[in-house]
Image (cartoon, rainbow, N blue to C red; front, side):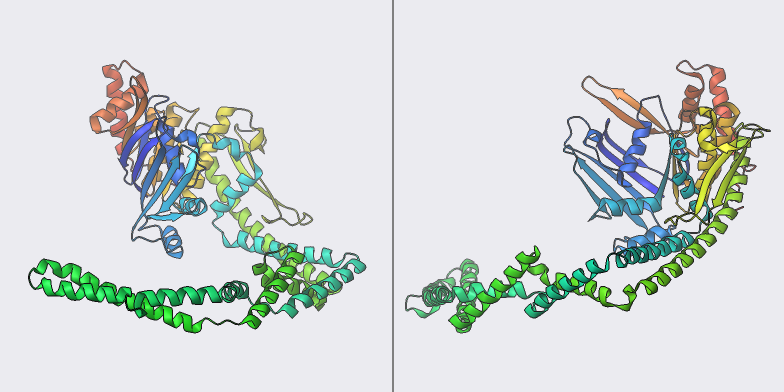
Length: 567
C-alpha cells in the first residue's frame, strides 16, 4: 500500500508531502481545487507518459515520489527481486519531468525504464477513473475485465503461446509454398554467400583485435622511438628524472631531521621515485615486445581489406559479419531441412492449430464459469445502486469456425437491462448516461475485489449519482477499505462520510500564482467539510448536525460485508 507521497512543482502544486495509511481515505474539496491532480501525480510514478505541461509555471522540473509498503504484496516483492531492485519491506518510486518534457525514473534509488515502472505500478495500484464507462463499451476491455475476474492467467498465456506457434508454422508453410524456382534461387544464393563468409573464418571479436594490431605494426618505429626516448629521460640518462629526484631526496632527507614537518614532502618524493621506476620498467618491457614486422603488417592489412570488402557487399558493419553468417546458415538449413517439406509442414501446422483450439476451448469454459459469477455479482450491485430489477450478463460466445486470434475464439459482450421486463442489450447501446455510469461503477467495484492489487484508487467514479445510492457506494468503498487501501476522490458527502480517513484539498490564489494545499482533517473539521459538501458555503446548525450524524453512523459498519468476488 501507499505510505507516503511527495510532490514538487507539479501542475499548481508547489510542494506537498502526505502520509497515507490503510483503509478508505476520501479526498474532497471545491471543484477545481486539484483533487484529481493528486491522481495524475500518482499516475506519473505508475508509468503514465510525461508532459512538460505538468511542470508548474516557472519551475525547471516536476518531481513525484511515492513510498510503498510491500511486506504483504508477494507479486511486487517477487518482481523487485527478479529485477534486483528489492529493498526490504519498502519500495520507493520516483519520477522527474523537466520543462523540456524529458523524464527520468527511479525504483528504490536505481535508474529504471518507464516500461519497468509501469510493470511494477500495475502490481501496486489500480486506478478507476470517472470516464471508465467510456472504455467499458469496448470488447477488448470487457474481455480483459472478465479474464482478470476469472483469475486464470495460465489459460490466456497458453492460448497466446499456442497461437504464436501456429502462426509461425503458417508463415513457414506460406513461405515454403512459394514458387519452387524462387526457393531454388534463394537457396543457391545462400549457398554462395555462406560459402564466402565461411571461407573468411572471421571470429566474433577478431575485427577489433586486427584493428589494434594494425595500428601497432604500422607505427612500430614511432612507438619504439618514443618509448626509448622517454625511458632514457626518466631513468637511463645521467641527468635523468630519477637521478634528479634522488638528489632532491637526499638533500631533503638531511634537513628533515631539523624539521619533521618536511617528512610529508619527503615521502611524496619517495613515492614519486617508486612510480617513476615502475613506469620506466613498463616502457622497457613494452619496447621489448614491439616488433618491426613488415610481413605481418601486410598480412593484417590484407585481412582487414578482405573483411571490409565483404562487409560492404552485404551492407553491414565488419563486426556484424559473424552474426550474419549464422543467420544465413540458419535460413539455408531451414530451406534444406525436411521440416520445409510441404506435407510435413502442413501436418505440423494442423497439429499446432488443434493444440490452439484445445487451449482456446479450455479458456472458453473458464470464461463462461466466471461470466455467470460476474453477472450475478454486478446484478446484485445494480440493485443497491438504485436500479431495482436491472440485470447484467456477460455473454461468452465461442465460434469454432472463427480464425484463431491471440486472445482465443470467444466473442465477449457485456449485456444489460436497466429495467425489469426489458430485454438484455449490449452495454454500448445503453441510452442513459446516468445508467451507464452506475453500471460502470458496479462493474468496477466487483472487478476491483477480484484483483490482488493492494491499493485501489477511485477518481470521481460516483459522478451522476446521489442520495441513498451515493450512501450505498460509500459503504461499498468503505467495505473494500477493510481489506485494501482505498483512495476515493469524491464530491459526494454520503461517500466522504464513510471513509476511515479524510483529506481536504484546497486552492489558494496569491498575487502571482495559484497553489494547491492538502489538509488531514480531524473529527471536528471533517464534520465541517461533510457539512460544506451537503449545504454549500453557509452552514446551518441543522446541516452540521446532519453531517455529524453521517460520520458517526458510518463508523458502525458491522452490518455491511463485502461479498466475495469468487462467489
